Amino acid sequence: MSEVMDCLIIDDEEMSRNMVKHFVEKTESLNLIGVCEDAIQAANILKKTKVDILFLDIEMPDMSGYDLLKTLQDPPEIIMVTAKKEHAAEAFDYNVTDYLVKPVNYSRFFQAVGRAIDNILNSKERIRPNEIYVRTDQKIVKISMEELLYVEALADYIMLFTSDNNKYIVHSTMKGFQSKLPSDKFVRVHRSYIVNIDKISSIENLFAVINGKYIPIGASYKDDFMSRLNML
Image 1: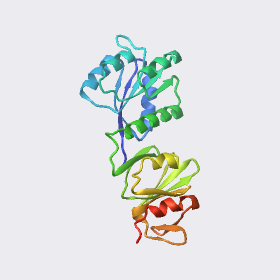
Image 2 (image 1 turned 45 degrees about the horizontal axis):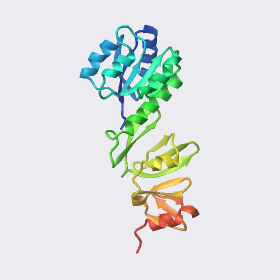
Image 3 (image 1 turned 45 degrees about the vertical axis):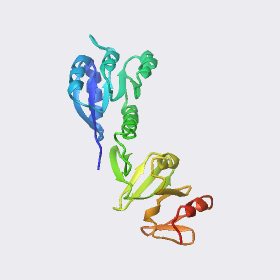
Image 4 (image 1 turned 30 degrees about the horizontal axis):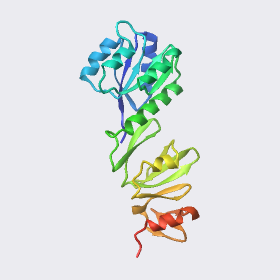
């Protein structure tokens, strides 16, 4: 299942609005609900509609981007898109997610969006104890803890293997990902592997067998792993 984030663009410059709109339409994990020429128009929309991410200019007539933020009681993730570098320090006083200086390239835009999505998915409203959301191939995928068999390290990435024979490549460290997993179900058995204890069918010659896959048990992880098993 993919998770799509609703977003709103607010900028008084037509060229900038069109640039961000083009980037949003290229990004599968984003759904554009509106494009506003000024902050007043945006404020009226935000009174009636909840969004996940705002792409917000700062210097606009009648109401600035900062003025708009002051009106929001529960602001979404804010990505500033502005021509002025000197506003950056003040912007982060408003707890913005990222600060993009025009002209913006897609790589930098996508990085900012990824940061915003990570913040959203790590919030209490988005994370449930029995599932986790991961970002892979410009999509947000929900994976049930029950379906996750094991995790394998892959250079600067990790690969998630699920019971429906799917594989997901995610940019994360093993340590960072393990911190998001229930410690009573998942255990590190090797520097390159985390396993779901409930899915182990057997242990053979220091290999944990899951769905026909022989996963090595590292010497430094052996004692902790064996202590977690309900052995007779």
